[in-house]
Image (cartoon, rainbow, N blue to C red; front, side):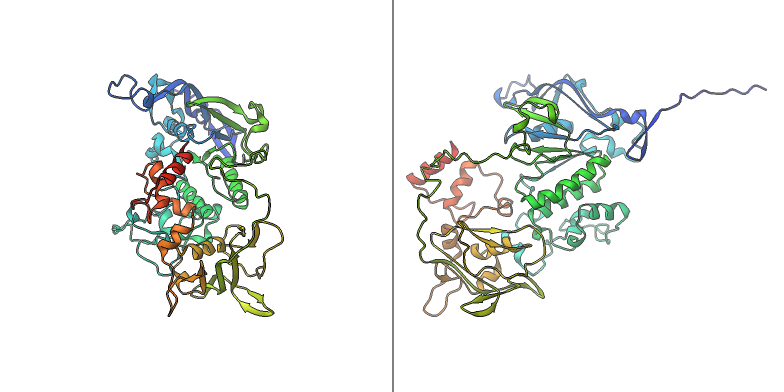
Length: 504
């Protein structure tokens, strides 16, 4: 009796970061060869040719699924250079010509199990995380579009004040199903993501109370829970202070080294370039790639982000509005603009501001005592975090200018919210703005929120999240002269001219 022996060709394997991978897994996740992309079909007649210009013509790019020495990419370009568009192309968006010039070989390989059908779809396997736009700084989703800025400072928890755990588990609907009402099942993978992104102490906190850096870590954690093959992070360091960048960058490095998932960053020229980034794509004008390859061989290496700290040009004496950038003499100080005495902000037993004592006129008193006079320039400095400050603050300005007021933890935003009256406790605390209290008293009128808004400029990531996205850029600037974003602005010829100057 003969026995038939079927010869099966051996499959070569290689070890990459502790994983045994077949040669199938060496296929690139993304492969683009000499392609050009369009937002609409180029032969469409009813369109403006300029609005449908070619995107990155003759683009060639490849992201391997595995390599003994992985490549960590960063896409670098100024605003409007097309960083987000470049990421959209990597995810399979926009029309590709020729159609076969873009492919995703690894996503159709046997290395992705049959049970992971969603991982074969480019838009699911390649996840995009942005930190700007409609929901860039808001984790609550469209179901809470009516939220307001002061809500993050309130002690009462509303039904829409979803916690970080709710957000990570996807339970942010106002009308949840029976399945969504079930307790969150935290498996090993779930706990590992929370631990890796340092969110253990934040899982019960409302997402509206998170700082800018904490919000970004939560968004990255949410994307990681979907187990993508590639994670595209659009400007993850924009607006973060150096200590927060120092914390976030190593977290991303660990994920990139493990290739679980592979990570690509987009950065502005002024953003710090992490040391662990090995390759860069430099975007030129009009949606063209100026260079791609190892960062050491990039043209103008000394001008790459992180390689050189660019100083502000000191030869400029005036701004484009005609204002002198540097005072020839120190401005004289005048009457008090902001006065705070015995200010302590508490939520139950937790003190978030004023957890110290200061010596005032030889007397030790609790809380924050601070006076800002007309002509003074103050800076409030301190790292992000959740630990309230416990050290005494200076009782007088330092000799250097601008003055400094060091704070730790979440005190910076809380202090500014008291000045702008976005914090509800600003009504009950002993605070005077422009020599008037917030609430009226016998013989002394209070100061209204509209009067404050007309006299105080305010810009912050939290505020930007509430700007209606359908407004034009000019309409956003005009809202500086209105009571609210959507109210009719009080414009004059001088104000119109000022807006025109900023738009040039």
